[in-house]
Length: 191
Image 1 (cartoon, rainbow, N blue to C red):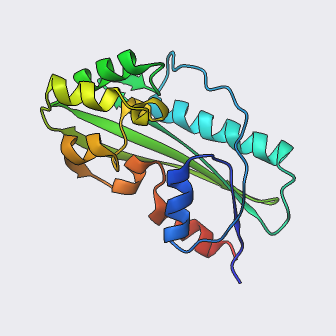
Image 2: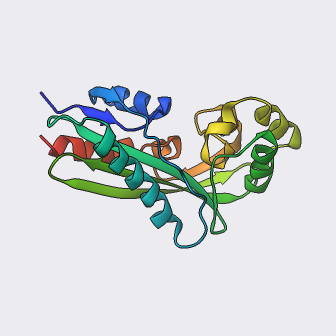
């Protein structure tokens, strides 16, 4: 029997991807970690720092069993070198979407997998190109709750992703918040 994942994330999308990949989840622990805004430095270093903070919190507070592999992750959107995190409100969500429409941006997801003896961490980067959707489309999507818990104010699997994404260079699942192919490869190695 393969070792279970202790998922250090309250994201329903990450849970769903693990289940669809048939990776057993022992428990879900939502880390209580502050996510400071990006101020300077490389976006990939920033997103990795966020994932590491979550991992350390789970290791300290999650009563991790020896058979469990802890998995934490964080996702950011980068436009012209600027990190777009989760919007504070619907107004900020609409402003982010106006900036993204008709343009390419990067999505970075950092993952940290660890047990009592080892740590493996990586950042997966994807290039996303958006269509030129209308102000009416933005207002429609921003009026709901969907954009408020997502970096860059959209989910690839949501309505805005369906009408907005023109192309993706890289893993669709990285845009959803978990590069499941890479997670699966590490999980398979750690018997």
